[in-house]
Amino acid sequence: MDFSLDQATRDSLVELRIWGREQVRPVGLEADREARPIPVGHAYFDRCLERGDGRTHWRPPGAPKSGRSSSTLTRLLLAEEFAYWDRGVMIAGPGPGLPELSVIGGGTDEQKERFLGPFVNPDRPRWACFAMTEPGAGSDAAAIQTKAQKDGDGWILNGAKCFIGGASRSDWILVQATLDASKGRAAQRAFFVERGAEGLGPFKIEKKMGLKAYESSSFTLDHVRIPAANLLGGEARYERRAGFKAAMATFNAGRPVIAANAVGIGRAALDEVILFARKHDLLTDTRVRDRIEAIARKVRMARLVCLRAGQLADEQRPNIVEASMSKALAAQVAQEATSQGLELLGAVGGRGDHLIEKLYRDAKAMDIVEGTGQIQRMIIARNLVGLPR
Ligand SMILES: Cc1cc2nc3c(=O)[nH]c(=O)nc-3n(C[C@H](O)[C@H](O)[C@H](O)COP(=O)(O)OP(=O)(O)OC[C@H]3O[C@@H](n4cnc5c(N)ncnc54)[C@H](O)[C@@H]3O)c2cc1C
Image 1 (tube, helix red, strand yellow):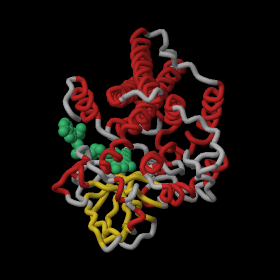
Image 2: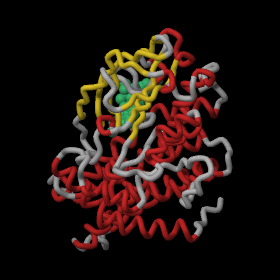
Image 3: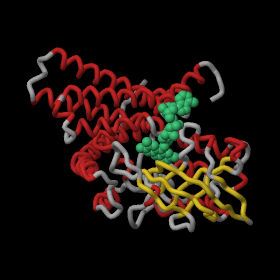
Image 4: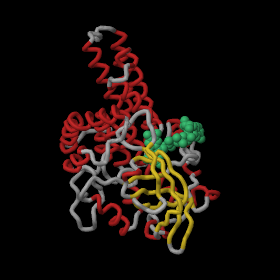
């Protein structure tokens, strides 16, 4: 396995390290202290746009390429570095976010132009998000109840979604709904629901133990009227299970990114532990060194599996097992690293104002989002023995 990096990736990592130290970490600590998401009008988001963030990878036909590397390996390394400084701030950043790949892969040309076009060169920080989870359907995404009913040549949506990242500030939400809940996955469709649509909301920002820099919102859809043009991919695309498959593709692409984030959190915990041990003259204590060694070894292991998942994606080879392994392993390692770190710092860690304590709270969600650890382990096992997923 060759994970050597090109010069452009190295330069991006150095640049991100500086950005992380000077901008990301401070704004993340501020949001955590104030226990609220970074407000929409925060100067940090304007600085993101100035830096070139918040843009889509999609290019209108005939437009020059963005110049940004699209290799999965590079994206994973950048995701790790960003999360090292603050994973919540990474998710809070403007941009088309989680649904971007679904729209690039499954949207009509007109939908790409309409919904991703404003992210090509955004005039202001803009967000979009993907809404699958419901109060009664998390891991079992096939059980969603948000109903889509045909209405003339459009649709009416009714239902409730929860824990959706950035929902209240998004220009549009890609909402997963079902034509008939009794027909399971085959009946699912994704709809662009635009900001301000009648019947959308109210939004309630959830309380979270960590990752406070970005909002996770619940909202209802009460007779929201959707034009026919807002069905992702148009009706022609919905041959058997295409709607559900598209949503799952979003998650499959996302798992190694979450794993990379978890590796970043684990690395941050490791650095905090070493810093603390050095400051308090503990590096000569074998027990302390053993703990540092164990954290470092596991973080390195998790990174290797994560990069392997990315490398397979770059080679366009199946990576479902590696993607799930990377997420199951890295999320676990991040929790262990932060927990061990907290323990090692003793009262200083438990006081509630040290970074290690925040990392401990941030790490937990890595095991929940985009498929819990248990679900990843089920996917891995079913694949290994050749059962359908
Ligand atoms: C910080 C955060 C951000 C999020 N952002 C988004 C977002 O932007 N968009 C979105 O759509 N969703 C989002 N979610 C929701 C997330 O995807 C769900 O929380 C996740 O899928 C788990 O669902 P659940 O919370 O309903 O737990 P459940 O599915 O109810 O699971 C509860 C427990 O049971 C276990 N379990 C469930 N089924 C099985 C099984 N068959 N076998 C063994 N064990 C099982 C799970 O592993 C878990 O431990 C977010 C969640 C969090 C915490």
